[in-house]
Image (cartoon, rainbow, N blue to C red; front, side, top):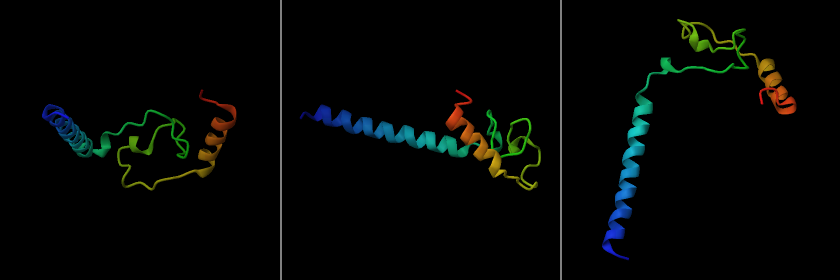
Length: 84
């Protein structure tokens, strides 16, 4: 094995770790309030299908969770393939 092969092997590992650390840092630095919910959330009782995070003061309001809605959505997707 030549020194050039060893050098490029270690160089590619170093570049991979550098880019992975950069992407993790960039994702961790993003604020939570910019998270978009673009799909209906089955366990939340909103008729529009959006998330509780779309409201202005969602942190101060109590969070409602409907287990029946989630189970109903899951069963309709598994047995009927409703959204496929």
